[in-house]
Amino acid sequence: MLSAISLTIYQYRKYLVLSLIISMIAIPIAHTIVIQRDRNRNEMYGEAFWIYGFTVYNYNDHELAAALPPEWDYNDGLHTLPDYLGNITYEYPVFGLIFFAIATFLYPGQGGLQPLWLNFLLVLVFNLNLVLIAILLKERIYTKKWARLFVGGYYIYGLMLSAGGGKLEPIVDCLLLMALVLREEKQYGKAMFTLGLSVQTKIYSIVALPILFLTSPISIIWFFASTLLTIIPFAFLGANFDSLVSHFLNTSSYSSFIVNPLYPGLFFATQDFAMGNLDNYYMWPPALIPFIIFAVFILFTIKPYLPSKREFLDAGWWDKIKLLRPFYIYILPGILFLFRWVMPWYLMWLALVVFLFEKDEHMIGYLKLITLVGLLYAFGAICNWPYFINGPLPDFFSHFPYGWWTLLGMLFLVLLAGVAYFIWKKTFDRRERKQLMIQAARDRGELVL
Image (cartoon, rainbow, N blue to C red; front, side, top):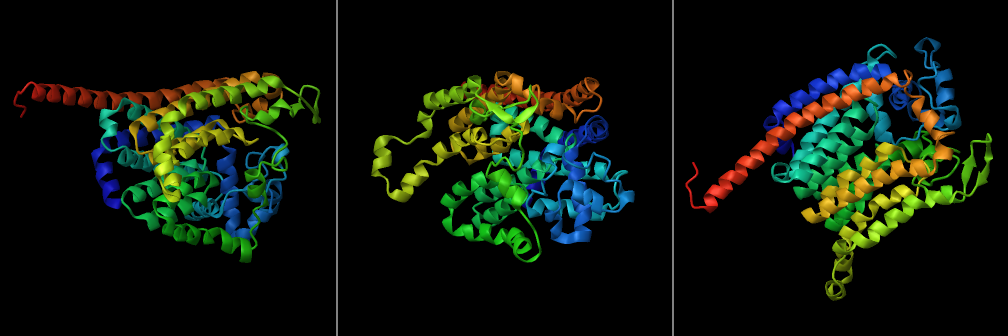
């Protein structure tokens, strides 16, 4: 894997340098126009780890901010979650905490340049992710337009979450992509261990576990070995994962808000924000529209992901399970309809599992499904507009202190990313046209030197 990474970095060095330059420009701009609460909060918990160890999991944001030295100024309202999440203790798994603890140890001292340092580390990881994606795409990155569009979509997403949001997703994605590269290299034990580290950073990458298990069942031992990072702090060092469990189990104790416009539960349990009584609920039938559209789309497009009846009946029980792998991957985006708390960027959590497919047509169909779910997310906010305009949306926009002026900064960042993608895509399109011309000449019997 290291050899493949080194070779790919050299191969795409010009584009990676351009990406790093744009990322470095984006970091201070985003730091100014966006309140990056997740990064600030992780910075606080990372610093606190060196004082309290794993018992930081027992503190909610406001308790920890009050417990730390006052001169660190974590009580500024920018390092804690909103009041409706005020009772949430630290919910990220152990490897995520360790990453920020090490980062703050390498560059100690709250405030100043430390937040920018954290963004910088995440930017480096994000650019490594681009390299890993190129490795997994192989020649498709030169020959398939959908592959280049996928890289462009991930580029915008990764830039926003690393330079613009300071979130953990680039690290989770990096470890997941490494696991997929190791799987292709048939290093199944290392792949499982790396996937375990990804899950220990943020739990969503566990969706890849069944596929890796079917590839090599015995390698599950290494996945469990990596979970010791959670078991040991939990059992012996005082960690408390109640908030993580509450989030995963979809309980209202994590948040009384429902921020997922795809969530069908809004049909019979929409909170009455308009009247100011959050304990009052009413039925809202339009909330079911996104789910109905998704279900109909799945029914009309699922056939290519299912084995033929004869093939399925003739296979043994273990082979039957393997034959259902494409079906399992294809329906994964449906889990976004199950959780109360799903932010817009969660959609890209499931985009990388496209590499678990073996056929290009399956990959293309899956990316179309991901695109549909993204459109349904926006459409769901419109269907539930009376609820979102009075509750979740004002809170979301509070992260942009300059109001509408923030859009100018965001548009500038998108423009920079678009320029980088245009340069990259134009080069690859020219290469593709050249290869087609050469192939056409060879088909005519001409000698091509």
